[in-house]
Amino acid sequence: MNTNEFQAHTQQIERLVEEVTALSDESARVKALDLLQALMDLHGAAIARVVELVSDSGESGKKSLAKLGEDPLLCGLMVLYGVHPVGLRERVAHAIEKAAPQIHKQGGKVELLEVSDSLVRVSISSSGSGCHSSPDALKQLVEQSIREAAPEVIEVAADGVASTTSTFLPLNMIQPAMKEEKRYEESPA
Image (cartoon, rainbow, N blue to C red; front, top):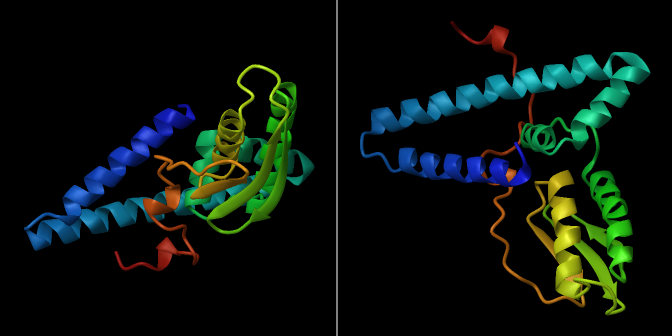
């Protein structure tokens, strides 16, 4: 599943959650939302456990976890459940480093200026040479790279490039990341 397919699935989930939330039958609405929350809690606990087991497997486990964290689909799920092994700033910086050669090839430069919970600000400059080297095209390259590494980022602002509205659905719009550890064995049966 690529990033576009993942985004399409998240948009479908959002539409379905909106439909469930709008149900007039309160009992059905509550049961459906409870089912969704229980499923997400179970998935979150499972993903957190996988991250824990892999990270406890020594140096090879840490390398495997880093590789898993770079996969766009798994990265998104780890972010969704609040268990990504790499911090936001480091993922964004790595994404920019990864995009820099392609941007340089197109006559541009990119510099990371700021990272907050929902905003990444970069500086993009273009020499005007090379194919597709407009500041807008360069921003799209940077933005795509950042969104793959940090799907929780809501806005990528580029100094010197006009802002455009993105249709990207941040993962945190589906369900906030788990903030507290859940213990299922303590739940009443």
